[in-house]
Length: 161
Image (cartoon, rainbow, N blue to C red; front, top):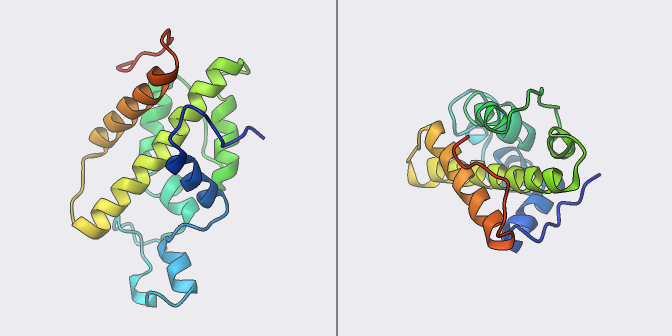
């Protein structure tokens, strides 16, 4: 399996992904299991009437999961989301072929996508603000470009593709 420890991604994001892979994020299902929230508070912040678990929030939610379809379109691939987040990371990293440079770029985009989904979830939960999904995707494109451009001066990457 490809490594989540990428030099092109800020350490706080890599640690976030490490926690995501181990199901250690404070999603509502985890908070419920620990007795932090009540049964009535366990549903996804997107209003889709499903329990907020990591697979649901990051892959299968009607709102947040739709981000992946826009990302797939941007990078020019067509895939189906697997059920588990680590499987998705592996599949996504190899969706553009097996070239090491392409895989590295896709892994950075994957990190940026889950990071922005989490930030949008928190904005909706704690600030009561909701950005349009296309705006979230634009932030993913921008942050991916920033992270990659900081380490690679010659970058085969189209921000607006």
